[in-house]
Length: 85
Image 1 (cartoon, rainbow, N blue to C red):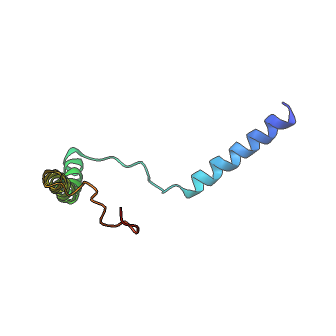
Image 2 (cartoon, rainbow, N blue to C red; image 1 turned 30 degrees about the horizontal axis):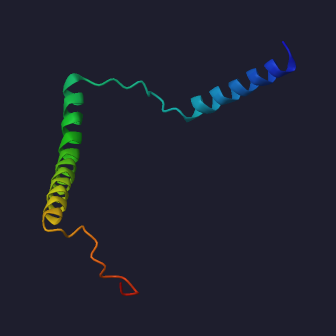
């Protein structure tokens, strides 16, 4: 082994030790089917209202932009010119 390979092996051992020391004892977690379903339902109940509110606001925004174009609000009329023309 060369010095570089030895240094790499020592660095990898240090990384393994630090990861193992930070791991949770008994961290091998298994979920039952009912626990997983309950967790997914809980996440859905928290996420879906926010997603629906964002979709509703996007729908309102699209509607107001199209209505503004119908009445020519988006066209420049020279109201903010400093010099008349």
